[in-house]
Image 1 (tube, rainbow, N blue to C red):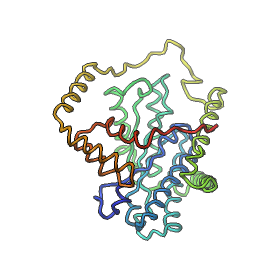
Image 2: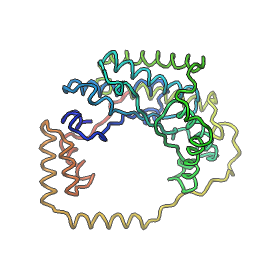
Image 3: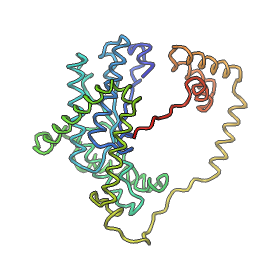
Image 4: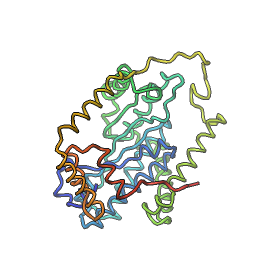
Length: 340
């Protein structure tokens, strides 16, 4: 988002967008309402940064997008996505005075939940992913990633990837669910649950403000603390069988359970990659690279926009490691504070 705010949204190509992710928040153990509130609060912080930089909200808000995790509680996930759209539209309109209808649209990608997949009875993951994908579509997702059944064991095989793809294709072409926008609108349960998630999210927004805003809350360990408590609570529910996961803590078939064949990476791939890197380093212009890295370090020690400097280092064939080493020299390595 730095390039948009530093150069002005109108000077940046229209394909340049920013994705604000809640996926890893949920994967770390957050609840649905925490994912909803923390992700949107992050988005609002970006909006405030753009406005403070002197940009009109309608110049950049239509180019913000989101990334949500989709779990097993079918109606809760649908209501979460519906609540997210309502909150975003209302806050952009009422607080940030957006005029362009596109600024009020919550664009989002969804991915089925990796942390719900089990290594035990992995074929069950096909069913989990199918229900999660259906919830995402009914909740209004604009794009979707379906996980493969064997991702808890290894990188997915060609067969498992194909099954994940076919899951989306069956949804798209056989079920009819993409043909209606917000098809569960009007359902008492879905509407009541949407209202409740929205109410709980508003409470979390107030708590974040009480911490001093998004950045202060991060520095104080607020989010890590809240997510950690939720993760511990969920783990305890599993251990006490108050939360049933089929094949993991109930409906277990025994120790001789058959495992599917997993993907094996040919060791020759590593050798080819190492050889390619050595060849790249041998043919690149070392003077251009050193000049680019020096300019990046100088910019990092000042107040320059680092995006063009990073791009120039990449164009000089600096590796990710070399570029990050420069930034580590200037900024150090972030260490999370103890949150519990």
